[in-house]
Length: 138
Image (tube, rainbow, N blue to C red; front, side, top):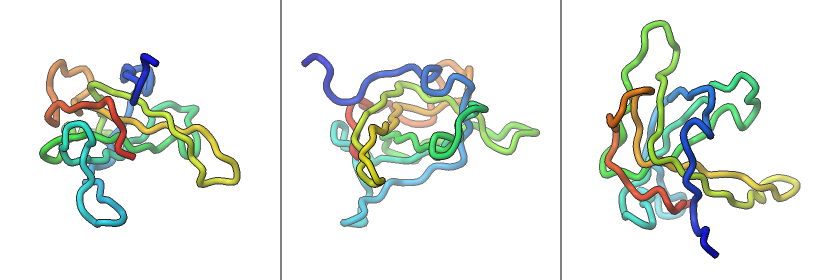
């Protein structure tokens, strides 16, 4: 099969109304308590808490985490006066479908990955080093 791993996707496809970052933190392995690393690059994984600006997003879809593999913690864009959150755009996005069996019935869920973080509309300005967004470490 030609498609393996995460599927590349445009930022505007995932967040057509934009996105806002709440914060970023290291992802820690639950069992070992050590930083989780990207399976392809070996770089540490960081989770950016994001609010989807889509006015129709509800429940779990309103707030998501986007994983970024980078040597150092990704730098979020500067705050914008008059806004409660930081507008953000992700570069090199990929989506990894998986089966979530935590509820009453199994359902298809998605894990989001990105190669970098930038200010919306800022060409080429990344808040983290590029990484392989092809695989999900979940």
